[in-house]
Length: 264
Image 1 (cartoon, rainbow, N blue to C red):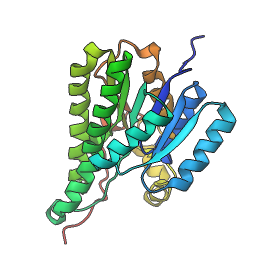
Image 2: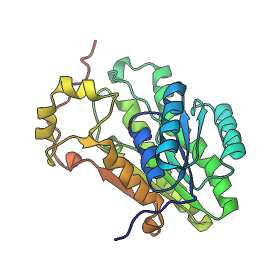
Image 3: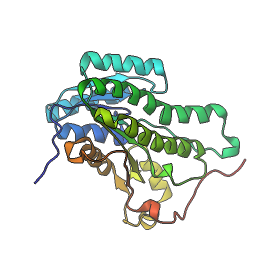
């Protein structure tokens, strides 16, 4: 049976301290990759995760904090990574943010904040990683998007627009970097239960989600992480510029709910 082997690979996962990001870090480590865990504010979680991964899987781990919407902080993050990880083979642009605000009430600064984290951040990180991968013979960039890069949703105009931009950024990066032996793909999760949204899903009603999602269940973080590990491996060597939707066929169904904000 073929198994995913990432031994000797060096991976940077943005937003890696929690949620989908932390599971991606674990899965890459399971497959043998050394992992640099990026965090924004949650240093404690990043430190704990790094220690657990190192102990459990015997790979090297590092952590680094940065606001990925800041070019200065991204510069510093990659310089720190150069000194510790000494190169990069896999970049997972996972860090993201959202807020639910009616389009007519959406402040410009909140539009900018969500756009900067979800779109400018991956651009900056991809640029830094791409320059390094170009010098070392190639690599893989995986952008974590969302089914809402094509499915609109009330109250999330800024988030949906950023993810739609990330989908196209992935394709443009793929086209421009393929001759450098750098593969770029996007992974678009649907409803995935994490420690951050577990309460919200429970308040919505788990049974409702099971009814809405054709597969009959909410996704697990491992559903995303295992797919990322596959895409990062040589088993996916001919996959360029693709968008992988992992949603239990959710986006193919007519989403029958939209508990979004009422106009003030």
